[in-house]
Length: 393
Image (tube, rainbow, N blue to C red):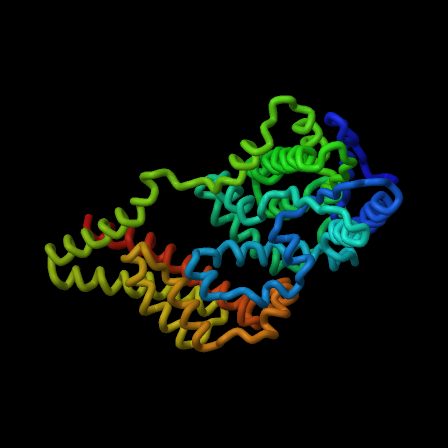
């Protein structure tokens, strides 16, 4: 076996950690052979509940309620997850392998032998939110743009990048494709997950005492996890609770949208105070710039003509009400006009790997309309706002 293996004894329990390559058939074969030939009592795998569910139930996306996703503020996260999965799917197709085949093998073999499965990775949504929070504000748009650029790109992954994947982490490799500074990503993508998975394994040791445990993880996590497993002062539950927290915005940050709205209204007021013509001119510019950029975003996403018109009309108003965004309105209209079909949900993962697929698939298109019309309105707010105050000075 070429895959790295580390062992550690805690009390009467023995932990065997197998480092796998997410792009290697050999890793899948090694997982299968180890579970079949060695006497393990518990199998821990580097998956969160969401990713596990998508593996055991490939049609899970078909059960998604788009309106609920949008109302609950999850549309951006679902869109990012799809784009992330699309990049990984493109990589797998280039190499001629099935994504995550070593984890699927571990699940299959554990179920066949009726062994308990412990999911040790942190929820992908929490990790993405912590990545977003850890990146400086001015880099976030670049990160999001890079994520979608990677989906649209037809360039093959280089040999160097493939070698990194063989000894690294697939999430880290995916993000560093378009991140200027991987240091911003290391803590939430690697170090925190090393701690989290080590804590989960320690919990498994407590729950399954005096057992032989196999942990199947990406090779890039092996060293970090081992360091945390050997720490005597690591508190499993406290570590998990801490790393499961989604970073909250600073208390004053929530007032920024309302401050911007107040400034815009102040600009209108000062414009009318100078002259009615200037006041109406400022309002007209606000409508055209804000609505125009939101409508442009919806059009780029392939929205229906009525949705594009809705974006133009709604964005100038929703930008003055921080409790509702332009994307919520445009995506709801698009759902009403072009109700997603069962086929769209079934083909969502495949269609999200190409630019045409995002525009063809109604589910992907609605998510893209939400994102781009919201982004257009946000840019329009700042562009129009600066233009208003330039004319008042």
